[in-house]
Length: 256
Length: 288
Image (cartoon, rainbow over all chains, first blue to last red; front, side, top):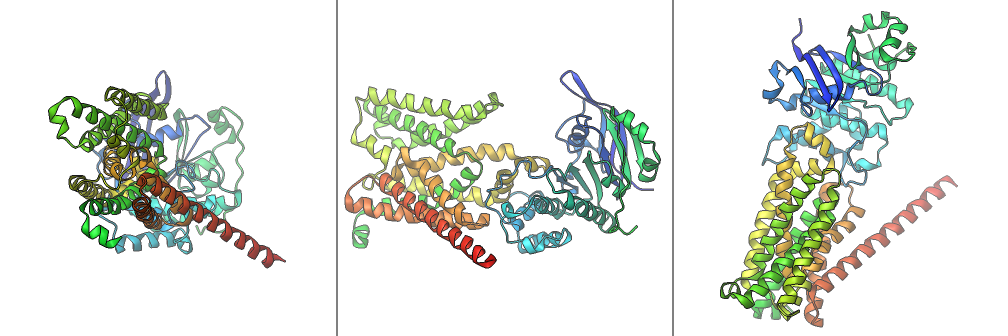
């Protein structure tokens, strides 16, 4: 029996007139790897923003690590990775190490400076994502896939129990996507970090996730990966509103 | 030169103030540049102009103001302007940059009115516009020292937060860094640095001391810390060379400081270009 780290009860959300999320209930437990899939405009990012506390639900309740969202104070337990380089300026003068260390900002706390220990922690997470060789390089000199690994390291720096990712593979070359997902799988297995990943790539990620939720304004399916795989493509197409054919990938690097 | 500095108080005031603003202007300037707020510094310096011109006019009219250092009203109006910009940015959420020309023209407009009312440009005003070696008083120097302490403390205490808000504002928000109040303080600190620098480089050229050394620094630096160090080294060199030549040639230091910093920037750009050409040649020869 695992404890729920995210618990959504009957959550709805509207942007002005249009209903984006319709009575969503979902429980995500410790150490689970959830793929949140659904077509464009299905409310996936809205749901993440609610979990992150950026948007407030119009109705329903959200609990994180057992605490109500409104009184939740342990922000450092959640690591966040957005779409590739969404908001950062690639000419920014900063090294990979400086960027990763900035993931500790909140944990270190106001009025305090980073110490040698924080730098060591940054190096440690860079090793986890396989980027320690690039520590002294300028962040803008890296490829999209490498930058995304750095941003994962930044999210991991504060030792989160939960990693939330919004389409982290957008803008990454196809050949690097598989190794990227394999790395996530390893983080989940070896480090026990729960992952909630939004994507519209339904094939690769569902091979690696332990759980899958299909969202299109409302949750059409949620459950363990093996049940998802047993689903009919026609059912999934119906939820998506357009034909969907899944391709079953072999992921040889992943030890089951 | 050194014996002149040792024997004249006005030179001590000018050089000490210069050395201090050579540190704080590019230091804060780095954050201004990476956050793409360079024009805000310009807008605020023009609001400071309104305050200075207003104070100079009032000193002709009201006895109280004739005893008051115009720098105070200049700083106060820059701080007021910084808060107004934040308010306006909030009112025009989709056209945030509109706040800048509005405040900039308000500053020049008010400045023009006060200058006309006080019957044109006095030598005092020219000193404020382009800086002065001889007009920096002991009191001005103390103002600069106090502001420098505030600015350095702010950057020392909020370095982590400033870095993350500058590098990735969305991430800062998600990770629970309260950027709203850091931003508010940032604007006030910017106004203070403008207030501290205007006696030496002049209102019209303050923003260049905050941006040009940084422009040269980010050409060379790989890290943020490196960019900080380069910015200060370039800023300090520009101020020193600028002040010494202004003293010897008897011209406004604002001009010599800014032209020196532009020369530094050109040298850096040329050096960078030579480096790139060399690298390109090395790559080519490696292939051939």
